[in-house]
Image 1 (cartoon, rainbow, N blue to C red):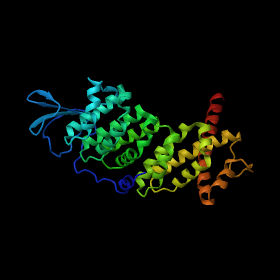
Image 2: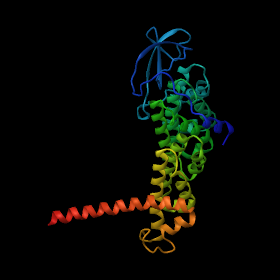
Image 3: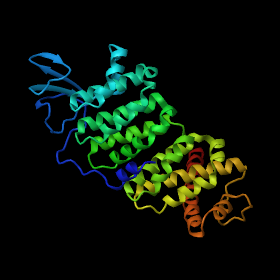
Length: 335
């Protein structure tokens, strides 16, 4: 992990002063090419004197803008031209050109992912650059681009993930709602499409970040990724390692982290009991050596083990009570 990435995590970007709409749509707004107003855009088509152009230049023009969902994107007209001009477009100083290039990255990822594979190492750092852009239009378009990259390239971009992950964690933790929601969707795409065996080591350092909101988002990603390992994958990764991670998050500052930890612990308990073929044992029982209770006590400090067992036993008792209520209800109905 680079020093720049670590520095980025230490301070969340301040909230923009202007409130912006998170809904899709289009609007007309006069603008100067170098103006710094925030504009919600993902796909930008610029019209000058009624004619559509790729760049309005320094003159004043009307800009119709709209966020386009991935399933509604259309293919590029010329693959070779789009690939050749992609890096220059992403590195442009004109935000309209950057947004157009970002959407071309999305189109190529969806329709022609092989064509962009060789330049992925040049593209992703420029997408990260757009994620840092203070203009919300560019930032959100870059977030949507990241989601499509995860979906298309899966594990092929794992070596390029760190700076992208840092920015998505930051954006998902900020106060601007429509950016935050887009970043959370991108993180879900990441945990869906990137192999958990590769992703979990990338996420783990952020669970100890000094920013509690970063920890919370990382915890949620971690909790979503673990079940994708499957029973055998979890055993191979190490239930003892995973239970220590989950236990450390139970006392975290934010409720999102604690809830993610509880979800993960219940998953680990289920896997452990399936793999050992043992019936669930409560604290009041006389547990055997391979019981969940003994396992927790052998791998965790006394306080952590107590906290973990409290969580898992409460969940189990709730399940038992629920089953009893159903049984009573059915019996009453039969009578």
